[in-house]
Image (cartoon, rainbow over all chains, first blue to last red; front, side, top):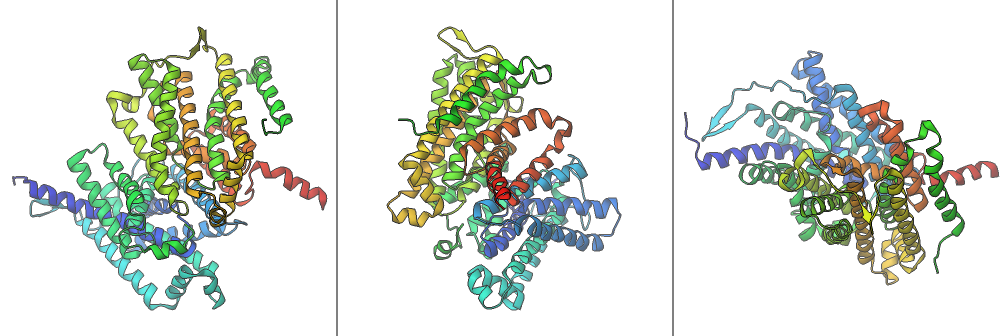
Length: 300
Length: 317
């Protein structure tokens, strides 16, 4: 039996924090994609994560599809849900103001939550870990193999997104909408399609986050709201709209939560990230990597 | 002079006056006055929230927390320290005002809807505190034995008596709020809603007005919380969760954000839906609420208050 030292304990908190933080980072990136194109905060962002987890459980456990098939099938399904949300809840709004758009996303989020509790009930579901559950001991800290999958997918998502936004025409068109939708439509970019694409992309990223975290923390129907608000806290911490900021913000947020729960109080585990959110709004609303100039142009 | 249309408020007051008397004589709706007490308590919250949403153009997804702070301050101070309930009500309102100013000031000074997320986070934090600080709040099991209300020896111990007390306060708050809307403050608020920069250019202190409205709405929610605690004699954290805040939002959106009468109608409808008509749906009522909110946002952006205009439009064609 190895002796648990304070150092290994702290390392354990850090690793757990970075894993959970990777999920918050993915949620924050999802927020930013939609925010950059539409200036709305999508309150249903956490529901994509919940759906990703539960649909994956359905595909992988109930239907018996192998991982390699169930994974992309789940992402496609959640992406379709994202597209449906834009087509039937966001686009039909006749006089869109930021206020009504936010309310619409809140409506969507409780609709999804209610439907999920209808389909799956209220119990949490487990998903087999991608490569087993034999923990690796690393400097006295216990690391689940699934942790690497979560962090790995954060890296894959980040790289794929930066290639998409910097190297492809479609990605550049989306960035153009983010800068100035009127100017973008003048040069022939279909802004409506870009909004649709932003919902699809951020649903897909949410699904990835949900699929990878479920083997660690299980998944149930009402997890979405908390994930959304923590992901938003991460996005604000990093600077709303900034992708590197979102990833940094997520990892910091996850670590704060993990250390807070371990060292201060586990009952208040969920409160730490939210307190940090309020503190940032108080002292540095532009976040770590956001720019004040850009936030002045935005309506939100 | 009171700046309010006198006929509608008189009709409304008359309806409130005779409702219990009528309902008691119809067996099927005999228990409706009890539900109306809850509707009245919720109306106190939505009157303030409607001012915040419809006139200051901001949303709060954390008013359940202010409702809860009022309820718990009343509950704890009267039950554990035997203090006068009316004094506790005022203490609750004062504490809520300070807390609301602390939460609202930073987010309302920013442009846009940071308040939505700040209040969401704040609401969840307060909910966690209600659950965790067991020595004060009784934790998830809640606290019971909260005394009822009495004034100069008159006990508000029956449903009817409490009904008239609550609705009396609601009508007073309503008249006061309508007066605010009609005053210079109200014009400033509407100007802010139309265009913040234009209002600012005309010399309206935009942030100050928004904070003022936010604090006012929070104080009303706290008052409602105190009434809730003394009516039910029991409170637990589940009442003050995130979903209650969203329900308040649905009440206002359903009635019509830009119409304070809408807040009353929407609150009444949703209260009856959740306490009575949706009993069969059990937990799936969430789907119904989601559908209502989405329907109103997409199809009826002005809520039920916009329906007369739409109907008129049909006839003109």
